[in-house]
Length: 243
Image 1 (cartoon, rainbow, N blue to C red):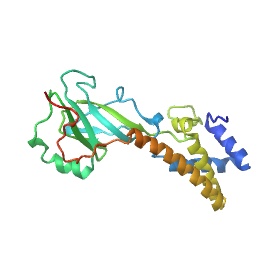
Image 2: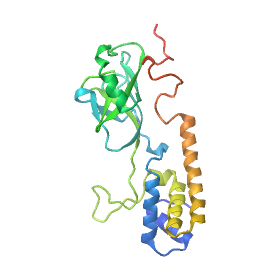
Image 3: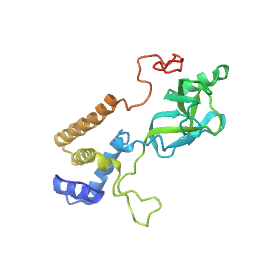
Image 4: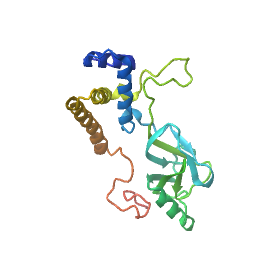
């Protein structure tokens, strides 16, 4: 089995596979392939929500984490991100920015869930460069954050590294090398004006992507409320009963 541990090995593999001798051309094709993969949802890119926290600031707004690519789920399991037996326990589903602003206009007319023995279905959305939440939550509230991280492109400068040091690996290359290979070969043959070969590797790339997407859907990792109920239903999760 051929292993691709780093970026230089990937370049050598593609040079050997295509018969090309132009290393710069191969790196350009890898970059083009990475642009196709920016939204890939891989398990290796998920945060640990029990160790990843965000703090709400003024006006119920929380800055969007700098390394976030796509949110999955936010929740509040107690005070300061730590679980307790008194709550509040709130699970936040993602909705649109128009909805969050519209519903926020009347949110003060409803009671906020504090120490209520139930799991509340809340909502969140991007507003500017922050997240806004409903029901309203107080300043300095700590939330657990579960999301897909952004990943560093190969051959880009290492932040805080030595001059000339570049990224040699990332979670996508380590866990989904077929994406890099098929995507780079597609871009290579597009550049070489070979549409038949380009179509073959685009089909391989799409099939590999669909396999990842299928696993995400089967496992319901895509986030949001996956139950067959309207978002306008009460925010309490139906599987919990109050006694």
